[in-house]
Amino acid sequence: MFRFAHNNINVLDLERSMRFYEEALGLKEVRRINGEGFIIVYLGDAFQSPHLLELTWLKDRKEPYNLGDNEFHLAFTTKEFDAAHEKHKAMGCICYENQAMGIYFISDPDGYWLEVLPE
Image 1: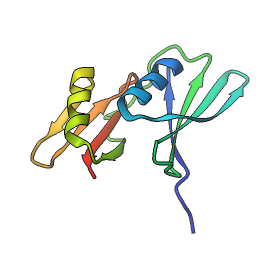
Image 2: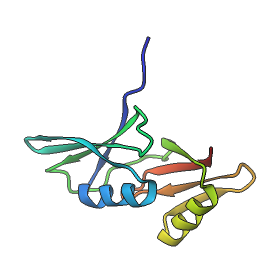
Image 3: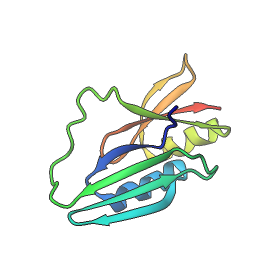
């Protein structure tokens, strides 16, 4: 038997990404690993979900990551869907909407897509 622990994404500017994830989704740092040439930060949600988002920053990485066709995404639910949509619209981070399905996607500073859907 297995249980999800975390998802990892690599980021170019760790502080900018942490600010984005806190402002856009309320994720906060849970723990950190400072290694030689890298920093890993685990973010958790306010509901204490056991699933974490791992942000990895590599000291020597200067060029943006190739996200391919960007089919990979993380999904977040919220009871405050309309308020979240307005907030993300004001932040300018909505990158795709599917009104027929009642969902939308936001894009983080590195171009990763994050799905937002009602709970």
